[in-house]
Image: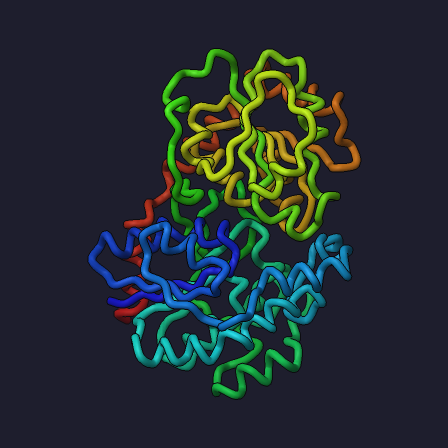
Length: 396
């Protein structure tokens, strides 16, 4: 069987899909990834064959330009988002840029199944043109706010989702169905405790931590002499928000003076935003979180989905400072399990960070909750089991 994966052109989104793609290959199926230029290195670095789509189109650059002019749309203040809302504009442009390449690839390679990030708006179009099953892949708990609607409606069914005219025109140009949910199912790599309720057709899969490839330094093999706290800020928050979205200096002010080892796992751009570091703090770039986190007592982050689920799989308690987009939902769900503490950005200062860190370090409750969450995840079906379910869709 041939399976075509379509990630959004953001590396962290491709990371979440990678274990399922590996599972298909390990089961003997042919796998191809189709993606924009921005994510080609991340995909090929995972050992997966990839075809470029969209030419010079750059989703992230377009999204940054669009959202920086409309900063309020970085946040789902009313808990809603849909193709009819303003934030969908960059996703629609990307669909327009990639549709022809995807259809050409699909007609030549002839996949039996299309598995795509919910934010890849051209994916249902492609599957409809090829007359093959479309499987939606959840990039995080908050995905319904950016997908193409559940059967044409919001997740809470308050009112129909109306697609923008440009998206309707694109689909109609290829004879694809519009304003309906054509997904055969939604693969969700988040446990029930970290899911929004009420979504039909959900196929939960055990998440496998993968945060990119990289060289593991020798010091990581040595047991830490003090509790190790990882501080990371993902790869996207400051891309969209600029310096205003970088709150690591405030985090470090709160951690200063604690008897801990601090490892800052940052992008190169965020590393350059750092000021004075506390004594003993270490900065690393390009070190995959899934290699670092098993040695850590706690994680401090902005609440991005990929880092959050990696820590959850490993039973690491977390402090989140949600800044934008899906991060508030992620932080709220995690805090609801007891395995994390969420701090709103306007409450972030040295005192609140220190109090939260001391609770994660010294109180048994967060660690016990993180262990319960780890066990919950451990009981979920692995990607190999989900492969069997998905191949049955294509065989039907």
